[in-house]
Each structure stands twice: as structure tokens, then as C-alpha cells.
Length: 461
Image (cartoon, helix red, strand yellow):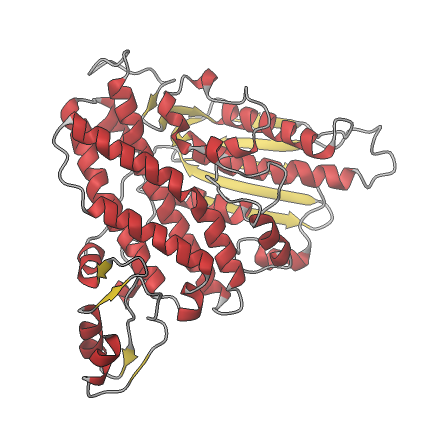
């Protein structure tokens, strides 16, 4: 059918970047793009499962821009929770999720044929299209019963999409020689940031629903600063975050290296009362990965010393700096620094000297939520002390299959994606032979919109 459409054009076409697998449409490059692309977009292809996927449906949703939100908007909206507001939240999720997924589907369709036919990337494409198709068909949410059905669909998709990160990472590594590494990393960053955005709005709505349905809920009740509004922790204490993550990382280091290996202490100095609104799983993941890298580097360097078992390793120093609009974490270690040969690949998902080992390790991780809870080796490191609602566990980390001592080589680039999502930043300064300083800056006010690619990349061409 598609080849017939091409023969009817008066210009020669060649298939390259637009070509994708059978479940999508092949978009030609030619000397008359408007003619050929318009005709190609009018076609449909029959998927292997016998279903039709008309391109016009995807075009309709790609034409809609994503509507970014801020932490402050999430707090203001959820603070005065009523039935009508919960229904409004449900309809925002119902219309926003398929729009955001549609843009990423179009980005995948823009990949070279040889990349998008990679079995891992193709599996992610199928997951995304099935979710898009499911959400786009939902009718307007009008009742609480409608909302419960929506929440069931959201939970199902959150569980099903736990395979996305390892699948994408393996696909990108396997395609490392087929595309420019910078283009692959840009694609991966866009996909992951969009994934975070969808989980934020989905899990926020699940949490609001959990709150609304709980027996202690009272519409208009005043919240204390130690409470959550959905997934947003109103007053996230910088010192408490460091303390909890340090405890988890220390327990992990002991389980990985053995009980007799000296573990460096984590010292916290600076503005110890600094606080900010944030999604706790995001900040814990970033800080946890940074501390994990520093603690392990110090341990490995200290073990090379002749008196390693009898001496105390140098501590990891964490400095908290609270400015008017930002909170900055500096994590300093004396773990010997980063080898110069590895520096160019610190933030890359697709390239590096350890790519083969990373691919092998990722093969052992069928599901991954990218939360600090995945690294917990003790049950008591949960949320009980934070009075979090039960829906906080919607991160579904308990359903992942990541061995806590397995190094995947993607902690730093993924941490940067998390940091930049709420308009923050993450930078490293390495002193080879001495140690590393990591600088994490986040917004203190919660007024920064999520940083999204609101349209598919092809729309800007």
C-alpha cells in the first residue's frame, strides 16, 4: 500500500530517517516533502497483531503542546482538595498523558530505521503506543466512579512501564555505533525527562485520590509543614534528606563490601535548617546516587592503603547552602577523583569505556523505577517517619528487580535528568588523584515549571 503511494508521486523518494517499524508509518525524505509526506501520513499500516493504527490520530495529539506545571501549582491545587478539583485533576491527566506520549512516539518515528528496529527500543515503542491508545480513548471523567477506573488504568501502566529505563538503556548502548552519540544522548534525555513528567502527574493524581478517599480527609483542613500534598513534600529538609540517604548508602556499602571494611562517615555542615518543597523520591535519588559514588570511591581508594583495615577512611563532606532562590548541595570526597579517560563520558547513556559491562549488567535488571528505595537493604528506611500517604509507594519500587550492588553506569546522567527536570543543575569537578566535588542546585521556591520538550522534535524542523 505504501509503495503504491510512492509510485504515484512525480518525484523520487528515499527512505531513511523517517522509516520505522510496522506499527508506525514510514515517512519519506524526498525532493518534494509536502507532497510525499502528506500522502504518507494519509496511509495506515496493519500491525502484526492485526490492529490498525491510523497516523492521523497521532498527528492530532502531536499538534497539542504539553502544558508544563510547577511544584507550586501542584501544591496550590491540591491544598484545597474537593470532589470537583479531583475530577478536574483526573481530566487533566486524561488529556495530558496521551499528548505527552504522542510527542515521544513521533520522536521515535524520527529515528533511523536501523535504530528503531532494535528489539529493546521497539518494545518501548509498543508500550508507549498501547498506553497512548488506551488513554486517548478515555471519555471525560464526570464522577468519582469514573475516576477510580482511570486510577486503575494509571496503576496498570505505571507497573507495565517499569521496563522502560533498562530497555531504553540497552537499546541505546546497542545502537551506539549507528547514530551520532550526541544525538542518541539527546534522544535519551528527552525520553527520560518526559517519562518523569508523566509519572509526576500520574502519581500526583493517584496520591490526591488516595488522600480524598482516606478516612482522615476533611475538605479545607489546614495542612502542617510536615505534610505531603499528593507527592509533593511541603517542607523538605535538606539535612534530613542527606541523613536518610547516608544511612541507606552506608547500609548498602556494608552489604556490598562486607561488615569488616571501614565505611567513611558522612558529615553535614552549612545551612542545616534549609528546606524547600520537592518530590522526595527525586531529591533522594539524586543525593543517594552522589553519596553512593563518593562513599564507594573512598572505600576503594582507602583499601589500597597499607593500613586500610586499622585506619579510618576520610569522611564525605556535604555542605548545604541556602540562597534566596536556590538550595545548593556540595558533596566532597577524597576518593581519588575520576580518571581523565572517563571524564568525556560521565553524562553519556550511549558511550563510554565500560559500555559492554553496562550492557551486561542492564540485562540483569528487567524492571527499574529509578528511586532511592531500590537501593535500600533495610526495611526500616521507608517513609513511616515522614507521615507520607500510602500512595507515596506508587513509585512501585518494590516491584523492580534491581540488585542493590549492581552498577549500571547511568546514575550520574539520570541524576542530571532529575535535577534539570525542575530547572535545577548538577555539575562535577574532579581533582584526579585527590577527589570529586559534586554541586547540586535546586529551586528553593518551587515556582519553576518542569523543563520539557513540549513538542516532538520533527515539529521544529
